Length: 287
Image (cartoon, rainbow, N blue to C red; front, side):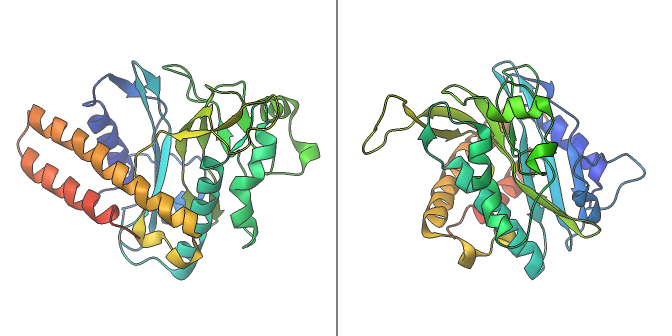
């Protein structure tokens, strides 16, 4: 059993064993239950909650590597989530996928893409008071311009001039952005799902007009939480994508686990590998 702050420390320790890693890209957000509803919660030693089996756990973490920067969030549950927790998670997941799977003309702004990530939550009266996506540097700032995805967190007239410039900036091939919708129910739980996306050219049937069409390459092979997914809410395309994505997660993460185990260097490495693989196999089974 761990608390939030020691868990953040352990994540950083394990990340440092990865090839090319030079440290965290920001302090890890490791929050459980009501603390997960605090968007930028920081767990401190001696004053953070236990990670229990009956509460939602949110972890937002990232690393600096010689070849790039990451920023990834997953929300987990280790027991039996409530119906509201499962529905809220699934709506956030749908918005996350709808943005990640978007196809759009080159030069489209983040403000125009914003509603893709918020619309599933809006159907259930859900919203979140932060941007949907920010630019990420390459071994630089984890939050970096010029482009961003957002504008729906407040009345448009109240969006600052700096954020207007970011959300209206034309998105082009090669941009590196986050995709992080969420939902935060004060005093109860918080949910956020975040991945890093690279903007790439996207083949289309007609390819009409002078502007090439773009899509996203999904760069964060971390499984979603099966216990929190209400499968009946998902659209067929979303279910198919998740199943294919989980095959990719299983292959890529297992290869890293095996590499780390082969490097050895500490007692209990075989037990740690077996435990990690058991979790990976369980979370990546077809929906």
